[in-house]
Length: 88
Image 1 (cartoon, rainbow, N blue to C red):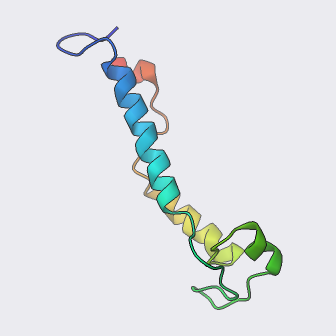
Image 2: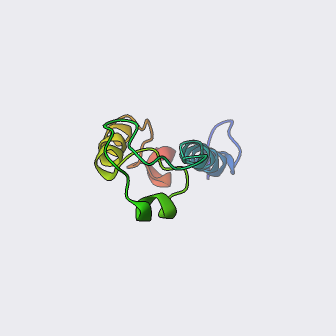
């Protein structure tokens, strides 16, 4: 139950909005277009199986892993937050 001026559904609406934003952000980062044959970062060949599995792939596995690590460090989302902690 929310207190003060907030409605009873305000907390859930905030949680839903945060999830929708995270999903939209993730979808915007999906590769688009034709897959490259060579990594745009290091120039290494991208295996055919990877190009078929991920349409629009632009990075080799090593560069993609590094990119993912960098993105995780700057995600900006409080993954430890729960509904209970937002109510306090």
